Length: 104
Ligand code: SF4
Ligand code: SF4
Image (cartoon, rainbow, N blue to C red; front, side, top):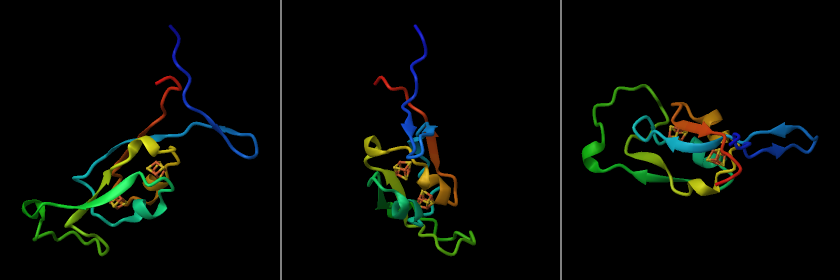
C-alpha cells in the first residue's frame, strides 16, 4: 500500500500548495486575545469563558491585550481550510497544524 497523497490546493497562478489543517489548539497557553478569531475565514473558532476556579488572579504576565478569563476553542474543526492564518497571528503558538491525506 502506498502513502496517500495530501489534500492539495492550487493558487490562481497555478502553484500547488498543501493546506495545513488545524488539528489542535492548546487552551492552556491561550490568553484569549481573539486575534485568531478575527482572521479565520471559516468560523472554526469560538471563544469561551474559563471556569472561575481556573482564572489566575495573580498573573504577572506582561501581555497587555490578554483576557485571562477566556480562551479559544476549536468548535468547528471540520470546516478548517488549512490556511494557517490563525498561527500567523497567534502570539502564543497555540495551534498545531497537519497536512491531511485525500482519503478520509
Ligand atoms: S487554518 Fe485557517 S481556516 Fe483553519 S482555523 Fe486557522 S485561520 Fe481558520
Ligand atoms: S491568537 Fe492564540 S492566544 Fe490569541 S486567542 Fe487565538 S489561540 Fe488564543
